[in-house]
Image (cartoon, rainbow over all chains, first blue to last red):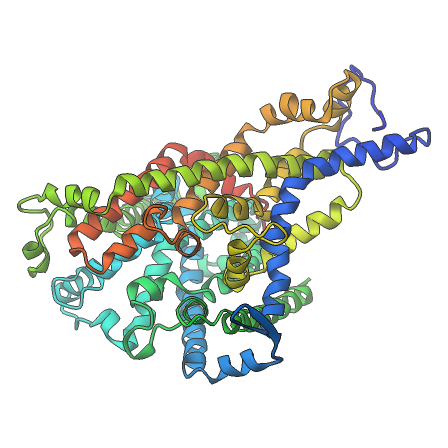
Length: 318
Length: 295
């Protein structure tokens, strides 16, 4: 590696130029090869893990979706797996449910953390305590949190926590997971409670980067609180808002553990079946790994479509 | 985290100090503190105390706020019947291994990409980051097939801890986090070490790692919580009752076990991560917010 600085010369202001790529021409070929070898040796463990457990399965998933394995013999079957998956009576229900969950989660799980972060950012007291509270459920194993909801909160009798609260407020009680209409909202509530902490903290960090002068100026122009949020807070956090929207969509489209635990899988009248749950069903219950792989590819295409739309939208704004 | 430095936010300080503003501020703060405590801590209280109630007491309306006759037996039953000691040990073992493997391989990779910069380094980094765009659920089937019959080696990793440890090394977020941190270590230091005749490994060990303690802590905590929170992957690759993780074990028992006992087991399963969080919350929060997600 080329030496570009003299030791003891004091730290150069700013970031020194990277020393390796444009070294002096004296550097011998052998030396270069050796330096590269060292670099690649440090990389090898991680690269192997990526290759075996990430890059290769990606390719393999696509290949598998066009194959069928019977008694150890693998044959190419073209689009057969896709046709079989499309024929599954639960296919469209699963997509409908998944989109419904994603939409509800965008309204609730996406908007709520943003406003919680704005609110917390205004407080000069107890902020540490409030942050810990919001993030606490994120640390629970999801299975633990979901059993809590399943057995206590969503108990359909009047002894259930939510029904007891509704009743004491004089509101009608609900059957929760036993009622097809309430299945999705109930899953979104549980999921939001479990997951919103991370988003709140990320929003808080970006809210703290907003220069105070912007609010000052908006206030002088006579903008009220709501208009300050609309014209200062939202534009200033636009990038992070867009990024988290994307992450939220990708995360909620993978809805799996909520149906599995809260609704025992499909739920009342198939109201909880999700695409991810269908992948699990095909792959690990119906012994149809190829069909599950095909469904995985369909999911990937749909999510890539979302990403493409997202990239276009964000590119236009800049 | 300069929340107390008096920087101006949505509402001006002056407005908050004036009579009505001040009253509103304190009222709102009180409402939020009480509300948040109920919403986020309330369910946990309900969980811990609910597991102490008898089956009868749970079914009564309206629900009781305190267990009238605490049934410590529920926790004892959960511990014994579900073999929680074994399940917790398994989970702890997987988490410890995950920390070790991630620290060794991901740190070495990030160091190479940040400081050694071998040819194609950027291409490799790009390919790693691209995996962040692939949802886990999409890969679950081919990953499973790969694990039951590793390419070339033809080894079956089912029920082996490596089935949890090695896929976790392929974590682009960690490598990105570490690389960004290493990038901020001045190049002069590296050059000086080189002048003194230190090998790259020596430089990593004696200069880079000691400077990177905070980020290594964050990566470790994330590794532990990832293992503790994961459900589907351990459920698939650890099919035997002896190798299960605690979440999977509780789920497997939930069908035929009284609900109070399941809840008691869930409480016990949640304790380690909650304790880790309460101890390291400062590191976790700064790790989250410096994780390259500034808007």
